[in-house]
Amino acid sequence: MKDRGEPRIIIWDIDGILIYVGDSYRKTIVNTVQYYFSECLGLKLNKYLINRATTQEFKLAGGFNDDWELTYAVILCYLSKLISNLDRKPDLEPHSGDLDEMLERLRYLGSTYPGDPLRLDLKKITRRIEEYGGGLDATEKTLMEFFGEDLKIAKKFFFPELIKRIFEEIYLGKDLFCDKYKEQPRFFKGEGLILNERPLVDLKTLLELRRKYYFGIVTGRERFEAELGLKNNFGKIFRPDLMVTREDTEAKKPAPEPLLKCKKRICKKYKLGEDAGAIYVGDSIDDLKAARNANFYFIAILSGTANARERDILRKKFHEMMSDLVIDDAKELLLYL
Image 1 (cartoon, rainbow, N blue to C red):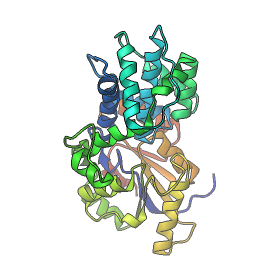
Image 2 (image 1 turned 90 degrees about the horizontal axis):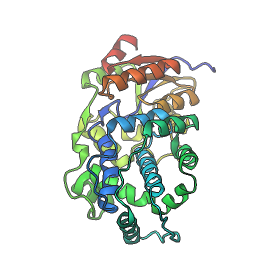
Image 3 (image 1 turned 45 degrees about the vertical axis):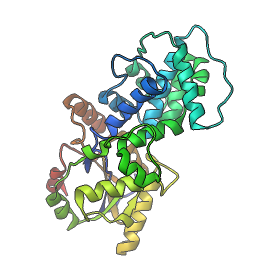
């Protein structure tokens, strides 16, 4: 490995590192999947299709740093299973992209469903997704292997635009959705789950670290949510101009471009040489891969994973992948840095 230099920069992920998102983003994934099948398709479901532990299984498979794409993948899995349960398969042309037509198609599909339970072994599916390399492409390869031609039919009822719209309304809530998109929500008019977020790192720790290191942010959030979350939880600790969000690069983690772009901004602002070492602090396999690809040091923090068993699994995974440091709480950074 190329020399990584003496660390002078710390670049932080937000979700699961600076801010606890188990009751916000993770819960939004669960609720969006449920809404798609219970409200859009009109299925009578007697329990939730997934839970927060399911979202972690997809995260561990890799390629799902983007929570929208994780939600897309889960919904495509269940659509494929639903189609496989039908004796008579729907025969429809590709849709026009109109939201009302999407909803009409989903209601039609729901009306033809016999009511069989949508049981799906997602552990088996996520293991195969991981073997294929993770992400949406690997999901489609896996579902083609499991369900064959039923996947092609399922994709006629798979509408990422609609899924994203439902996700954003549930996550942001009525007022923030209006602020961001300049229109009224259509599916959810309550308070957003973003209000459940809380800081995972205390200000004293951040201020102590900032005395010695230059700070940046690389996150999969859009800038609206990133700036809002950081301002609400940390005030002015982090500079918006040293933040790289999903709009700032076409490539996403685990590609190195977001990390390299953030480092370049920091070096330019503070007149650092290109040989200045950088640390990325994250909580996912994609975060570690991104750090490796950018030739950064990587520190994994596990405080965002509330379940002890999931935390132990993640810790083992990080050690197997040779993370530079794995700690339970950000306060421990003061012992090592």
